[in-house]
Image (cartoon, rainbow, N blue to C red; front, top):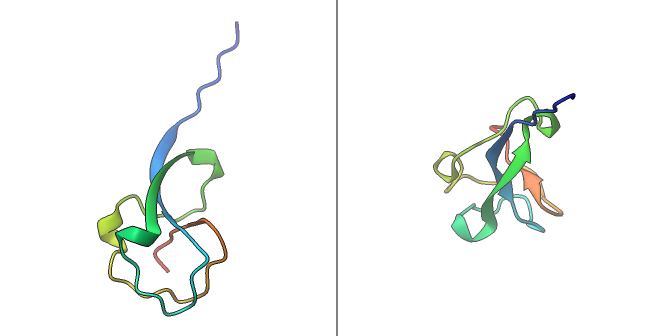
Length: 68
């Protein structure tokens, strides 16, 4: 019987829409569980990594937070 294993992790998601230049805080961020094979090469896993940072581009919807 074949078995499929799907590894998942919690990642930071920026809840949009938000304009460029917005200072991020807990109100516009969330942690969501996602499969590892569906994530970009770099992503954030803790709100502490992004709270207080400024958006460098506008966000139109729920967007995976990346270091850049």
